[in-house]
Length: 410
Ligand code: ADP
Image 1 (tube, protein in one colour):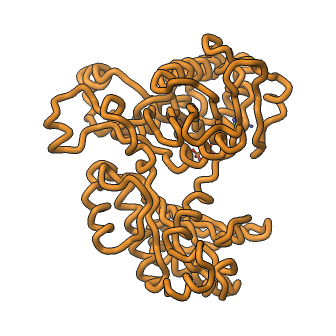
Image 2: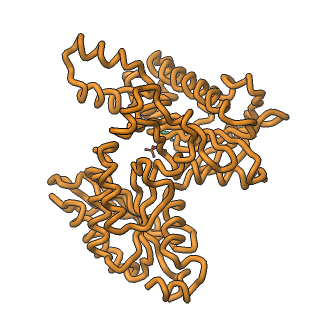
Image 3: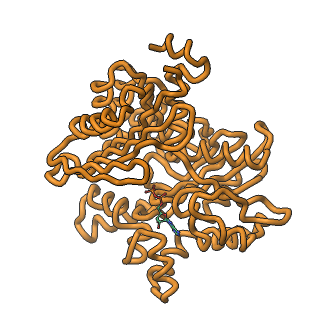
């Protein structure tokens, strides 16, 4: 079989869910995608999407392995399983150990385990999916793609917390940054579309989804980002507070008697747009409510934009020049209102909004939303799965040399 007929499976394994997509190795649209959710509970179910059809299958009490087994049975039924030539796994935390994607073996798995203390909710869940896939497809090359890896190029001034150095040496306490696959893909696309010289350009990418982070990118390399040791730091997000004075944590613990773990959960799951508005974490709902005069929704959007603009301004100081601000993620790709509010707050940089282009850019469209001589504002749809797939194909070793290389890889 030629490598171009091969498929790549992208797996994103969470604590109680497992998302997957099957893509052609040489790019193009997904053939099948789906989600196994509520794993480990009686309500566990599998949702499969192919050719625009959605199938829902109950799989009571299925764990990750059982869910994968069921997914593979469906792929086999469609004649796709034998064509899978590589598997790409999303891994949340690579610590300082991983600065790029890597082929999985026992040593790599041990290293991912070793950094699990930094992401106790995510890395063990990623590893469950990895082990289940390795057991089910032992002959197929499997690749780990890390959310943190892209940010390993940050200089110490950007990654160090101003805390006792022993915290970093002994416990890995430093800023790592996340959403690396999205920032990497979107910045490369922006540089390509704008025709910027590879070794002479500066970008800020704002990935605004349910989770949100912004990154300063100099000549294709991350030089500063808003997320830190964990994804909690930085921008206001759907349910995360973003930056917060640690004094708030100790004060709330003292006056409410809540534990640190409880407060951390509230800051991650009940704060952000949801906490501010008292209504929803969903930007669409808040925009509609604000238009109806809901004060909490209005405040939530204002704080979101204030924090975002402040961070973009700060990130720009890591660049010799700001060529472009790039919006991506569900909010960045779709919300003309948030983009317009943000550019209005960044007038010090000389942005000039093209209101017509801004209103017309949504639903996966790529386009410039600024005009005039100032820096460019651009919308670039993110494609984390596509980038994981491309890394997996490249590291599986058969993308460059065609059939000969594939034969050698097998
Ligand atoms: P995740 O981080 O879960 O992948 P997404 O990137 O899908 O999230 O982004 C989800 C966010 O995008 C939600 O807040 C949603 O309201 C917002 N969003 C999607 N479409 C629109 C739209 N048309 N206008 C405003 N916000 C939108």
